Length: 131
Ligand SMILES: [Zn+2]
Image (cartoon, rainbow, N blue to C red):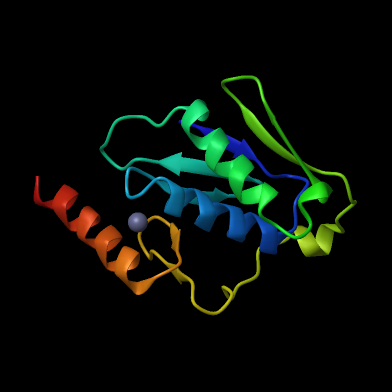
């Protein structure tokens, strides 16, 4: 399973990156927050490789106002997002409450930015349960 090391990032940035990856994958997979990592879950679909996630990540980071505060590193298998600015341990925690407009799947923890993709995602779980 493809993982993105986000251990140097703030909770807010981790959530934003997970949403950007989920959106960029267009339903082929969802980005889940797993402690300090973002994990790409395809539910029952084909595995999503790091080389598919990396360009999504780079384009998201380069579009941020604070793009220079991050470095994306990848060796083709593992991806890490490094922060060039120190982040306090407190800020690294992901808050109990999501920023407004985001929805979290009660089943797997995936975070989605629209009601539409949230509904699609829940439908995906229902499909799996039906088999
Ligand atoms: Zn889910």
